[in-house]
Amino acid sequence: MGMNADTKNLLFIILAVVGGFVVLGWVLKIAFKLIGLFIVLAIAVGGYLVIKKLVEQGR
Image 1 (cartoon, rainbow, N blue to C red):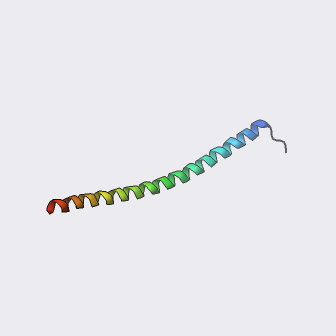
Image 2: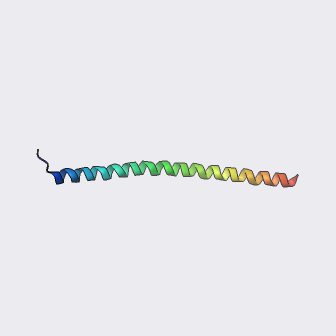
Image 3: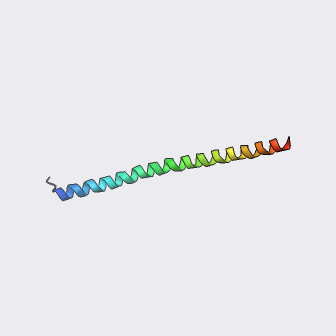
């Protein structure tokens, strides 16, 4: 089976693009999970600081 250089290059480009999308999908999935975690942590820390400030003012 003889493939010429153009066919090999095209096949390589297609595989590279598909692989890139797969990797990008994983990165985005992990990033969105981490963003959700950071938002929850930020809300928790912010709430803690507000409550702490209110308690200190009350004393």
